[in-house]
Image 1 (spheres, rainbow over the protein chains, first blue to last red):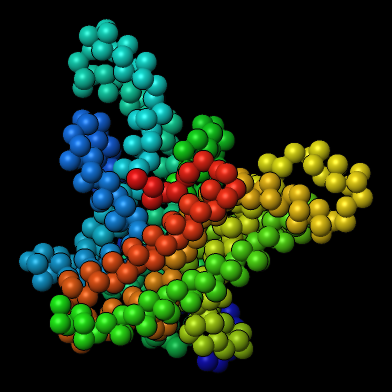
Image 2 (image 1 turned 135 degrees about the horizontal axis):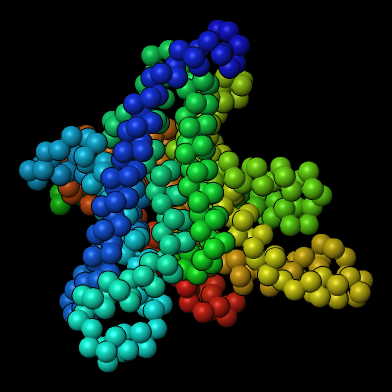
Length: 226
Length: 220
């Protein structure tokens, strides 16, 4: 490696390569978070049905995916699922794996949120003769979502950083691109600094949102899970 | 099954490395976080700003980026680390960034009168922290600290990517020898779940000892 430690010319040459990488990171994050949130909410609603077998299965699912390292889940998607006939590209597998993990955490968040809405709210809606769908849509969900927002944002913060792991299954996100640039230029410091700065900026946006939401709605469930 | 038995020694040695890396990072990150939290809560203003910046950066950067930074970028600064020390350095820094915020929150929860009473009794500062302040702060800080330790245990799997022969790395190399990803990764998953359960057990025992209501995230 020649030249100064942080060569501005090298950084200028490398930066354009990170454009699509940043879009990939944001895309993987957005897709896995969207799927995880919808699936987690669906699971939490399913649990409200009160069927014991469903509750048990959801509990095992959640415990399983919250216990495993993300890397193991991603390697499983990438290496084992094609053998079972699911032949998706690496990026889709990465989104699938992260979404499965996100579902487990979001399910726990929303489960706690439903429990935090007072029994009286359910009883009063039933006494007023509200059909269950309208009761959830108009009475329960608005209260539940407000209570769970801080925890949800806290999880999203962590999820954004966890997307860096998808580079291990050959997705060219910010981390993956930093590795490629490092290998092709034989300069380690600049690409790593660029990656560090990009991630710190991206997650600072979410961390500021987290602080704002927590200040407004209180930590409530946030502390419990993370 | 025979495949798993044939490669069990590799997976078990991987699990031992995982346990060792976790033990080192958990201990070091807690040891570092305690004085930093005291500085952050009671230190002079510049020290607070430095600790806050450290914590923010460590929490904002993905652990994997810190790990690659330690392994690939530090040599440019003339610091050459073997895989295991660089993994321990990065995982410790990342964990400490979180641990210190939890310990600081615990310190904040101790009523000011406790400090004043200790001072009025003429108790030396170190003994005041050790006997009076920390035990009370720990009651508040323990649940989030233990949650973070379970995340750190899972995070040790990243060390595989800088060629530390821990459980994930061993599982990966057994997969590439046998082409049986389903069974091998399944076995690694079971081992991680066992390690995690041990940690949840420790959390339960400590909560009993400190008389804190059960908050283990894996309780069911």
